[in-house]
Image (tube, rainbow over all chains, first blue to last red; front, side, top):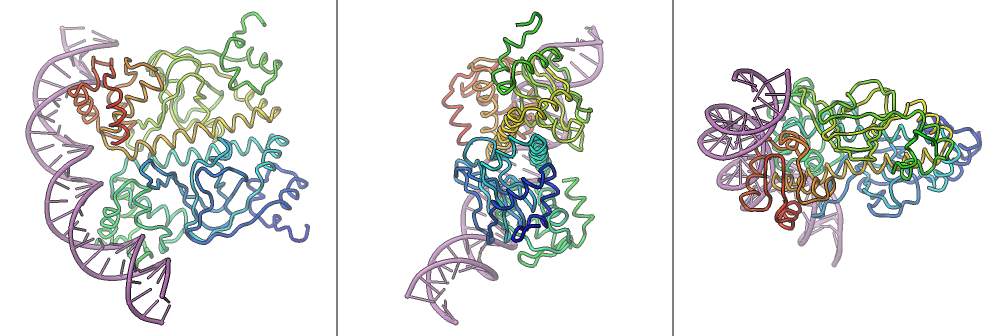
Amino acid sequence: MKAGCTCDNCELKGLFYENINDVMIESICNSKIEQEFKKGDVIINSNDTITEFIYLKEGLVKLFKIAENGEEQIFTFAKPFDFVSLLSVFTYNRHNYSVVAIEPSITCSIQLSELNSLLESNNKFAISTLKKLSVVSDKIIQESLKIKQKNVKGRVAYILLFFSDIIYQSKYFSLPISRKDIANFVGVSTENVIRTMSEFRKEEIIGIFGKHIEIIDYNKLKKICELG
Amino acid sequence: MKAGCTCDNCELKGLFYENINDVMIESICNSKIEQEFKKGDVIINSNDTITEFIYLKEGLVKLFKIAENGEEQIFTFAKPFDFVSLLSVFTYNRHNYSVVAIEPSITCSIQLSELNSLLESNNKFAISTLKKLSVVSDKIIQESLKIKQKNVKGRVAYILLFFSDIIYQSKYFSLPISRKDIANFVGVSTENVIRTMSEFRKEEIIGIFGKHIEIIDYNKLKKICELG
DNA sequence: CGCGGCTTTGATGTTCATCAAGTAAAGTGG
DNA sequence: CCACTTTACTTGATGAACATCAAAGCCGCG
């Protein structure tokens, strides 16, 4: 193990690097750049020139495009070890969406040239990247279809369960995004997100303490999500 | 040029095969299977084991998933030279969506094993596949966001313009799908798709003759699509 | 030729966005 | 650190957009 190189401890090694040999890992390790972001910081700006390949080491981010009317359109969230720039690095030479931290985050990035030489010299790596991209895309499409078929209650229940089950794995958590962001993501007006959450509170399905949410009746919420 | 091998005339060569040398092309050429499908025929059944890589040589197909309630959810259409199985070949070993011909179609497919050996032996091919997948996924996500922000009129206008501009490149065309399919794709009730189309007819924006559609006032339809 | 699915129109009611108005919270500059 | 501004949150009232229900004609297919 080389001094100063923390890649050996990095969980990513097992995921992304499974097809890369030690020499390559060391090369990446020496050239990689870690960067910290505060909540709200912009990590990627849509239309920026792509110069590096970025993955999320810690934190939580939202990915969104800007509609013609200038409004954000969140299409997914990414958690640690998701490849934040995966969906755009292989398209053109500019990012086609923005990424903003919604929790304190740390990214790790390697130069695009390095990624390309990796891809060109290591087919297994290219294939595993192909698989990863495929799974990520499918998840986004699948999720958007799921949400599309639900009514407002179902959608709000869905996002609450998303944060509880997938992101925080806890029935008590702090919402990392505003009601407006939720509304935007699930395709509902802000007021109706709030109203629906208030209803859930009155029916003692959830507890609301500002940004802090407690899921009281998990099964009921799940049922609303599935039937809605 | 080998007798019986039609790949030399295939436009795909320039797209998909740009990074494959002649020896490989001949190998593919000899093992490829062309298949014809009538309108309505199932090309891929969701959950089927993936055994081959399929692209569309001629025709038009719809790609959809099945919701929990058993309803189709169309998420995109594919035209010639789109890679119909692209979104699922690299995920698991089963297709995660269905593909049905909505016009007489011809597919060309190569064995999955052949695709894999191509990917493993030719990095440039792998990288260009990566790019293709990336663009396809982005297009689907982008389109779903676009539709999501529109009202019923805008959505119906959108799908009409989609067929006119992108698929048929003609102001007069025959709708390849039912009103129900349109409704399903743009996320609106069937009745409201019909009603909206009738309105467009009354306002002399379009002409309706059963499945045959004529776009009379293109600019107005475009405006409805953009503003809606 | 008759059945089932597709299409069409009308009537009805519900869901949901929008408007309005007020409170709370969070950021900003002196 | 406080006044100030802005942004987020909340609730109620209203109406419009849209889904749903119903009924009838149409088309294609076995």
